[in-house]
Length: 244
Image 1: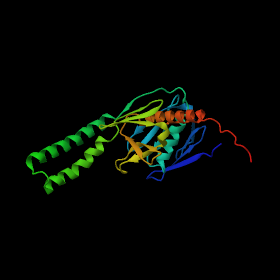
Image 2 (image 1 turned 45 degrees about the vertical axis):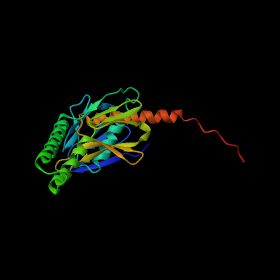
Image 3 (image 1 turned 90 degrees about the vertical axis):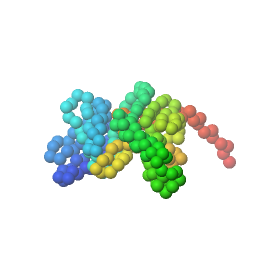
Image 4 (image 1 turned 120 degrees about the vertical axis):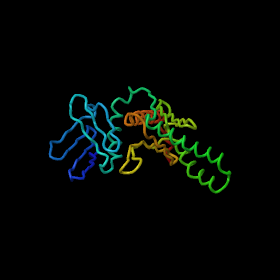
């Protein structure tokens, strides 16, 4: 049995929270209170409060376990929690399509709108290929391309992961995925969670500002693990060679 993993959060008031991850469940040791241990089966859902914490909501108890963003290696903590939850109903989970949040689409629309106004305005009121025109294009084009290439719809299907942005649709075979993990985007004042899908070629797919990001992670992790299990089962056993 693997050793439990421990993660520590210490608040500005020097109050220490400890989280312990094991194959059986999650243990939270809050400051000045009795420790709480829950089985993975007792967790109902995770509620992300951007910039602050992720609440672990239980099935039959009013107790909520807060996983604070400030926890050391918080991405690894949340990855471990969601990976264990993904293993509960691996053979029963269906398919679902996830979309970016309303705030994501509003932000994207505003950025692209500003880009079009600046570029079209510069075309009509400035001479093209002048230093001023090139400066306007230089400061607006990278941001517009960044927005256009950000995933807005993700569908973890049985055979592949489908990722759509404003330019293209990518069909990613699960054999190309090396691992899936949580990370932060932004800074300490405006941090929010994202999912990093690490591919075997060294590239990464960043998924951010989605509704139910934790549930999306569980779906991706489950489908990926199922695909790996099927691939391993389909590998024929090696034939023994002739002994010298």
